[in-house]
Length: 201
Image (cartoon, rainbow, N blue to C red; front, side, top):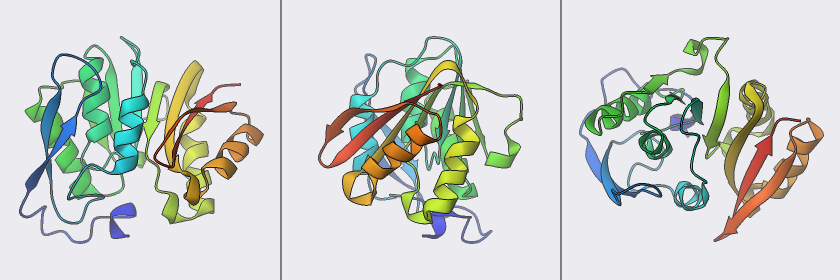
């Protein structure tokens, strides 16, 4: 679980490998992403992330997007590649993951990507489009605090797409989001994963 909280050590990323990522938009069908031990789902793109990518609508052509818990960047590079004139923030608490995400964006020529720890995102930045395969296993208090922090920064009319497995509390999370003032619908469902779409009230 160290990948959910902080970088395991300060010795650098170490040996990298690559995993294929199928893209949901555009003329390029697949890219290779750098990954390394010590980051989330290092050996393959996480199944929940893959389900979310297949379900995501086209992001806004212009604006600001956010990937909460970006890891080595599968959601970030997919959204940024589909919306090259936008700014894309990728946040994580694992510095190794951020470095890999940054390198993957650079290798793919995605100039609008900004990889940062959560506390380094300026307070005045607001988001039109949020995506996340959230870290459910950090526990409800931490998860709820994280979602409140970022969903409060959706612009009017903005949307957030979250993927959560039904056995990890997708339905209860959907109810909680609605109770907090973010109308939430089940946008799609596949292989036990729910795609939740949250909007501003």
